[in-house]
Length: 212
Image 1 (cartoon, rainbow, N blue to C red):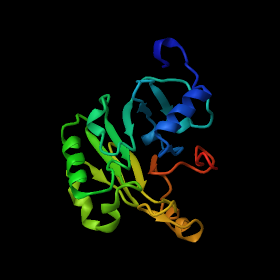
Image 2: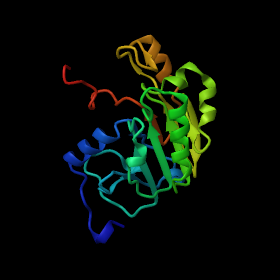
Image 3: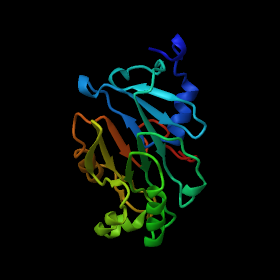
Image 4: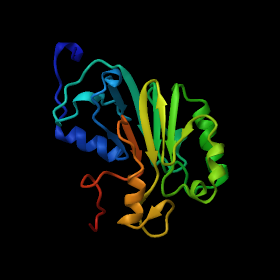
């Protein structure tokens, strides 16, 4: 049932704003009735952008009662404690939670995760998080969340796949050349997932710099 008995269309500028802030979050359509639930994407201004996973076919998406609330953050670069996050069922962080990927920065980020109320926390690295590329054991520093690096997890029936890789950009972490190297990474993404987390945007959506 639409909130307040009325449908609120998802207008283009709202979609654009959501993608600007959380460009690493993608919804994958599913026809599995067991996984049909409403996902809440918590913007910092509490814009209540709601998506029905099983009917993501148009930009004009009605707002429905909340079934599961997912709060999304990215590119905090060590400033995560300055955030005021809404509560939710799942918190996802799509990378760059450190400035240079130092161990002390990762440990501080995990301490912050430990005090958050969200039942589940799912994290991927970004191009600033060098330690995770340099040392596979770095994932063990995330004690209060689930770190994904080209792998899948399931949280309360929602299947989430995460990958930190991006097209090569200077000498940052998790960079690969376009073409076969990146194609091999994306080929690992399984079918039937509900949420795909990456540190970069999907093709054609906010995927260019000011210089093109």
